[in-house]
Length: 390
Image 1 (cartoon, helix red, strand yellow):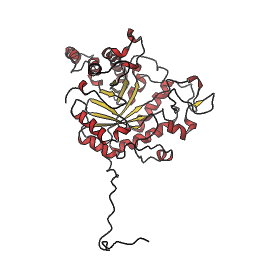
Image 2: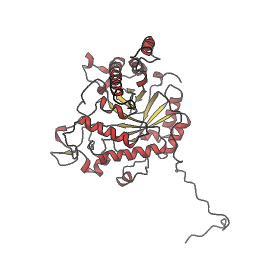
Image 3: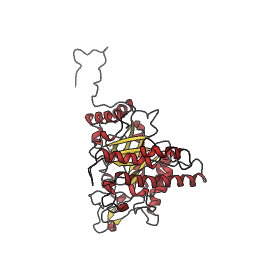
Image 4: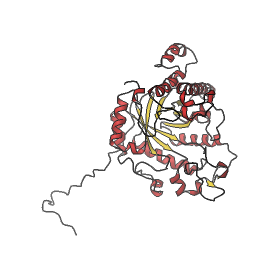
């Protein structure tokens, strides 16, 4: 049995040691979030690294940027911090990359930075291992099916999978994140798809309806939250669901922002006659976003005649700040940003300035559906020279 030390008396209660690794209390969202979001992306590991966080903050404060997207559940299915979610604990899904998530949010908010939590949804090897009954199965092998990268996927029709990700989102929001960004909200796009057995999907329901049902369910579960969805870049121009369940009009009513990933390097050779679309950053992004802007305007007009208070998402694309297909220097990165502004007839692009009066004075103005833009670099190193000063 332990004994009190000589310096401890009954009148001096034993002081509890302060845990240096303890986090602070949960935060609250920004009171005055920016109207137009200009963000960069950070992995969970970067979000938990003090030097990386300082780099992000300095970059954001020194430029036109105002937001940071941080992984809280990535492609591996691991969750970046200790969550008070029963199933996360049960499935062993935590890999602590951000030891003090509340402190990170406070650090961002203290600088007026909008904090976005990213959740990878249906691509989830951790959940597939814990719940193989809800994961895509290989018909030929009788095991969990995997894509070309060796990653497992969950059945997009499963309400249990929906609820699992919603529980994560609710924890994220309770911490003070300003928004939750949902990625991989789709059916698989690569691998031996003829070998897939879906444990839940009835196949009679179209893929786009499945994703639309998920989006609706998500909004109903998170009624007051800011939420966004990432979609393939070609979703802006294709009127089918690309075979993955993503159709722009199907999800527009349920999100605050829809983020097409219009990376020029991801467009196939021959797109619009370009042998290498990556060499045409302005043209590819402008064509994609201008078409999306037109579609969202048509959709907004059609739905307003049915229901006045129906929400319609704003567009906020992901742009390429990584080398693939071409060297993405300051000129190419900036060209994409200018293309987004031009697509919405919004300053400060010189081209857009010429059209600004026309757009603002006509019924064709699209500014109210412009939500900003985000830069993606998997290594989390960004081209500062491509950004305007604060």
